[in-house]
Picture 1 (cartoon, rainbow over the protein chains, first blue to last red):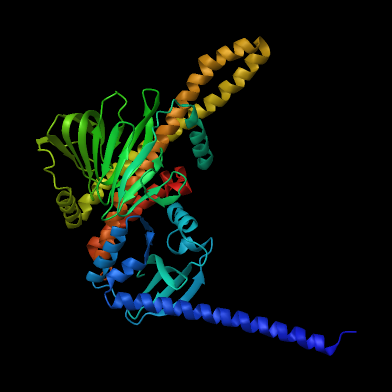
Picture 2: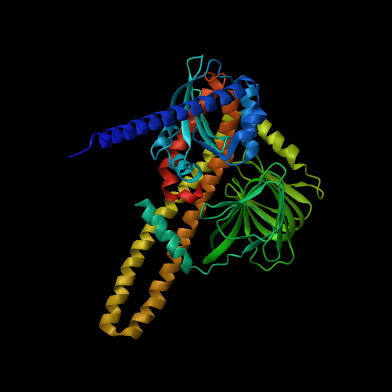
Length: 156
Length: 338
């Protein structure tokens, strides 16, 4: 016959696991929101230099794999100079990168290979809505308090 | 199916008399990376050895010097150089592929086995000892000869350059008229900036050049692919015939058949596989370093005005180009190429 103490202990362990998982999810959500906000703030502040510094190499823009860091830097500079902003940006969705995630950027062999070769564990897809009614996708990875941007798509 | 063809092509390449020469990194400064044929990326350092299929890229302040057994190669900043091979005279012949940027070459001596030089829009056969190759943002190429001779080919036409002569080749076109230029007189940065500005001023014209060049590469890939499959089938038949001959007439007759029929056919098939691979990578270079960069420039320019006619018109043509690339070229690529 099972003792009541054991049942209570098991229940406590299950509750602890659920709370722990919930707090993990909550922590992840909080980190995603922080990352999205940080990048959106840099775009809105016109800080192309910091965006370039945070951008990984190679970098993905829509379906294009950009291998030269100078081109990534030029992209941010020119986009900011052309008036690109994400005013009122809000994180709509955040998800880990999976084997099928490449199709969100482009369903091509090149983009599939980019995801397979250059995105390490922990990479996230962040979808932001902007005040202008459009959306952008960001490919990010935050490890050891260092945020890297691996890709950008939009606005669409 | 196509992946199987590619694997067969890569396996057969080993049967060609390879002339690939290891290339040593003798100097590296600033940002410079090497991407190996297997897809591994590392910082370029003095003492590194590059082989066929490897790519070296320099950053904004990067400089790299390579030694390819008697040939000194100096890469300027923002340059992409891939060591390739293609079939020439029945064997594998080295090709220096300058996808972007500028490369200066100096040959200690000429042996008759000098590598061919290719850019996105032209090829150069070297008979000179010192020359520079500039591969511009719009796919244009500038060959400048300091000493010796170089034959430049593009669009089915060729022009021979002697010392202190130069020629410009626009993407998808034959070489222009040659002109005189003195040593180190060319300001590559200014030339490239002029090319970039002209490309952005008339993206429709730039796109036309890319479409012509891509169509030519796709045609080559489709022809080589069809021939490669045909020869691979013939090779399989002849190998089966060789087994039957050995069984019916003995080992000696089998070996004679192998040497007289199978081996030459294997070399021909290998050469086709090599050229298929060469044309595939040339198309990838065009798509990435000219088409992709044009997309990036225009994307940034119109990112806040995506309904502008110039952007939507470009996008329509660019998407058609991507669709052709995905259908005809991508099946011949492997993940490590990306």
